[in-house]
Image 1 (cartoon, each protein chain N blue to C red):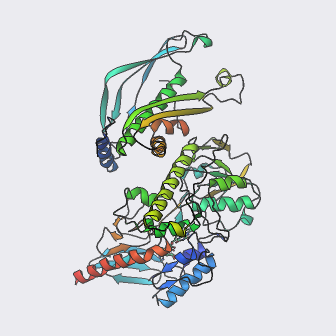
Image 2 (image 1 turned 90 degrees about the vertical axis):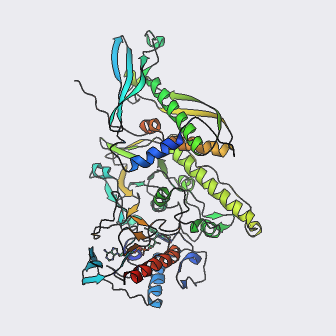
Image 3 (image 1 turned 30 degrees about the horizontal axis):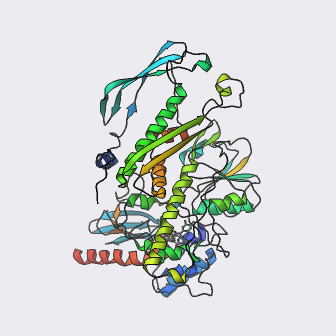
Amino acid sequence: MTTIDNGVNVQALLDAREVLKGAPEAAQFTWRASSKWENGVHSTTKIQNFFGLGQEQSHKSETVFTADHPEVFAAEDNGITPIEYLLVGLASCLTAGVASVAQNRGIQLRSVESTVEGNHDIRGILGADSDVRNGFNDIKVTFTIDADASQEDIEALVAQSQKRSAVFDALTNPTNVTVEVA
Amino acid sequence: MLERGEVANSWRRERWDSLRLLTPNWQSRLPGHHYEGPDPDGYMTMGEVVEFIERFAAVARAPVRTGTNVTSVRRADDGYRVTTSGGEIHCRAVVIASGACNQPTVPRFADAVPASVTQLTPFGYRSPSELPDGGVLVVGASATGVQLAAELRRSGRPVILSVGEHVRLPRLYRGRDVLWWMDASGIWDQRHDEVDDLTRARRLPSPQLVGTPERGTLDLNALTAMGVELVGRWAAVRDGKALFSGGLRNVFSLADLKMRRLLDTFDDWAKEHGRDAEVDPPERFAPTHVPESARWQLDLASGEIRTIVWATGYRPDYGWLDVPVVDEKGRLRHEGGVVDSPGLYALGLPVLRRRKSTFIHGIEDDAGEVIDHLTRHLAGNR
Ligand SMILES: Cc1cc2nc3c(=O)[nH]c(=O)nc-3n(C[C@H](O)[C@H](O)[C@H](O)COP(=O)(O)OP(=O)(O)OC[C@H]3O[C@@H](n4cnc5c(N)ncnc54)[C@H](O)[C@@H]3O)c2cc1C
């Protein structure tokens, strides 16, 4: 049997699962972002630090995200629209899941590509129709995967990836959100 | 043997009127006792199950003390002190056979459901005629949930079924009961120490099966065809509204994929063991039909739904067990029925020793092995 390598250290994840089973406190993470208004609907959000495994943690470097609205919204288009960041999150989370599950199941991946489409009726955010919601009406993700596996095994990878996805869960299930003024 | 009620108490008191076993008659086997009637492929009604178990108790001369409720079991110097409604007993070993389904589980957000909606668990439910008129929301799509949703829909009520992860099975596969395949192919005999992920196997929901004279399949497609509306897993109540998960498609995919894999296993087994000729050719079933747009919220105060039936599973009750062997999730800590306290044993829990452990026909092999251990324990203690 050739060893497969999708670049995911599954052993480390499985070990962590075992350790954290008996240490739920260490499993509590807080992800953080800090955002600043630039001008108009343009803002920048920086992410570097988070909390987890009982202590402060840090990414290798800070990442800066720019958000704005497109010109069709009469904005400067300095960056993508905030709701598009949800698509970034969903696609990257599901893709990471596919790679991890494939590694765990001994499936060698050659390529994993996906397109994500979120259908959005903007009459909601414009207040043009109170029956229309603000967020996406629905989201569709389409994966194209080349791997040493049957179509059925590939479908199972994608299903399992959704089952274990943080962003899939955050988008499909309600979450309590508190917004305060400091 | 101490029994708080009567022999076969759970089958007498904790089941709804129309229930039949989902296991076929020929499979109802207890040590030295099996179905002998004219319809081996049929499914027993509750009255028949009670009779079957009563007859076994009589034939086996089981020393049952009925009407004896155990209120406490605690460690004593060389064994256990058992307090019952009929006095105290001192013993060197105890077998906990109090059942895996003593209480229906209901999610915490049930408290937030408006009082105008009647809430029932399978223990309170007897038949559709006892429910208020109007719509019913059945929560949970395992054996109990699909059976109650179908029965309520047939009573003419609008029924919404909230579906989380589930186990889809056809009633018949290649002309045989799907549980014949589970049995014959050896899957049901898989031992607890052979199963990949024992925790997951022990949490596996019951299969979407019903025992009816027609031997029909009761999967989600069958329910959709009857006019039952499917929604996602019920996640929360907010502002008097039930919020359902938008992940319905994926729970369908997972169940369809797992069913297909299981049927592949059956086909491989039939081929390998030269059984292909005695069964029909392999078949595959249509994927679960995804509703055009499943709703993800429901106003509970609108009157659309008058009743909620929680078919969200069952759990054991160890309120009487004063020995520290229950984990933070309320599960008994044991290795194949040998509990983490000398002389204490368990039977009848999910995948206790085999996949079939919680089924009527599953007890025989488990009991033999557990009692073996128990006798060795008693011998060693002398
Ligand atoms: C809705 C439903 C449908 C099912 N359908 C099937 C099926 O089709 N086929 C199948 O094989 N299995 C089925 N089962 C599983 C079934 O529970 C088991 O097959 C079997 O009944 C388990 O037997 P048991 O003796 O372990 O538990 P139980 O039948 O629960 O018996 C436990 C007994 O212990 C008594 N008891 C509990 N606590 C105390 C106490 N503190 N003091 C004194 N007595 C106590 C109870 O009164 C009860 O009589 C079903 C289960 C449910 C809930």
